[in-house]
Length: 297
Image (cartoon, rainbow, N blue to C red; front, side, top):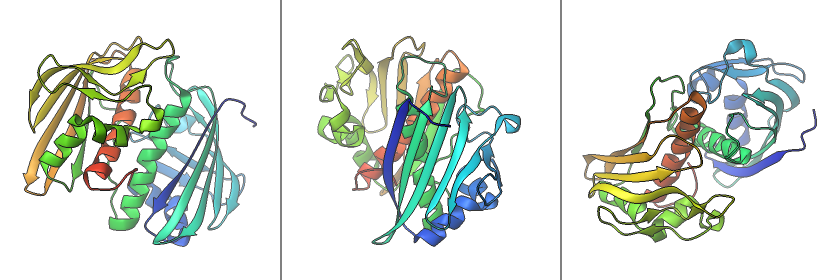
């Protein structure tokens, strides 16, 4: 297959040498510990590198898991094809030695998007997917457990994702409400405008996002706040039904907390799964920023 559509590329730091990372990428039981619910690996070109189940967004189940290995060069390169929902993909994962471990380079080519929405850049679906996957791989290599594993089969119109953060509740609150801090984890180079916050009920709250026509997208107004525990904002994103986002910070002790985000009132499975994947990636970025370093981990 040769794709002509969207190409997503990004590098991620891993806290282990390429050999250990390769083992985690090519052993089915390891994949089930950090990446997916179910995996099947046949370690050769033409073999399976199949994954499916409740931790895979837009997953259609075992019968449709058709991931096939196209490149296999231990411990440097794994390539595979994948029909992801409504999109056809080619993926290359390359590992290289780096100070402190390895660098994982992801190149993900897509024809179409996994979801039905025509309003979301397919590259954003790939970006969210690989931010979560790379962070979970890094956490597994470091401590034997993933960082956040959304369950995409959870029913209902409300989407909630939660993560543990080794930082005080006040530090996480600043990440959510200080525009300069927000620009860091949002990726200021990708923003149409700088984030804005007027920290009061009824005040402006924006990420600086804009749609193709220049109209504001994402959060717009603060509906409720209870510093440093709770922030509720209105939400607008194309034709999505959901119109409200709720952030909750729960202190665990003086130096750690849990951060949960709830997207209220999604209308379809595609809409809900898109938010679950997107917010999981954002929680990882916020956690990394609150703990003092940029990027996912």
